Image (cartoon, rainbow, N blue to C red):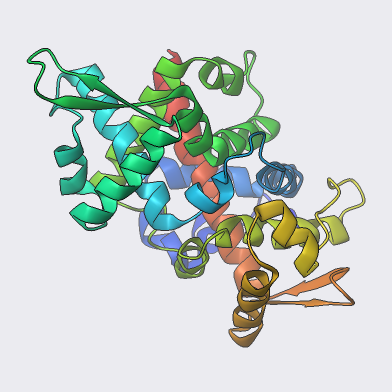
Amino acid sequence: MSKPSSQDDDDILHMFVRSFAQTETWKLAAQLIKSPRFTEALSSYCEVMTRPPEISWPVNKVFAQKLRYIVCFDLIGNYSRWRRRGAELPTLAALQRTAPASARQVASFVNALRLGGYVIAERGQDRRTLHLRPSSALLKEIARSPLAFLEASERIFPVPTSLVSRIGNNDELLADWLGRSVERFRSRDIYFAPFPTIVQFTEHDCGYPLLTAVMGANYASLSPGAPPALPLTYMALAERFRVSRQHIGNLFIGAKRRGWFSVVRGGKHVVVSQDLIREFEIWAAGQMAHYRIIAGEIAN
């Protein structure tokens, strides 16, 4: 499934982002897709995204859903901008103005994050305002997919010193890296919005991790050298992502009805539509490029 280097970039990027093909991000994404290492790197990304969580708190349930993830993403962005540029104070009120949820939803979620130790509320200099600081644990959870994408890009285009290690082991750099990503999304979302199927998966609890499990199984069936895939049984997926078997079943039924994929032979085989494969691969290449470019900026 590697892409021949002779292919035109517009053809590779297809209708999803063809109008953005000349941007820095999508020029690099086209080069990543053309690499013979691309499928292997993407397969490794899927394996990382389906690993069991390292802690008992239900991180997949909490963070693996679009709205909650974006609230955390925005919280990190607010804190990073304030630290870097002295921008608006990173308060709950500031977060409520930017997050795609009601003020009550944001306040309730932030309170849960504080109780879980993922957000630290610190008194400002005036002693009246509370600044919301992301903990190291929150940074690492929100950076899980970005770091995995960055690692995948390094498998394709290696660097002398790993950007993943440098950024992933430094909370200040990690917050800055994620914060700059937030700014680019807010300025012009050419990274996420063009992919309607990916967006639909992220709107469900653990929908995106489940999609990576499906795509990982697809790549494992095509390449003997691919990492072993998570079994696509209701029980295995429910246990790994800490949701109910009924929830997994509902996601599978919905995907089959829409023609995205179907799981057969008791979870031992999956048939994925070519349209979904193409969308996932272009989306992933864009994410690799997006985070690789920002990593290069802050590593200098």
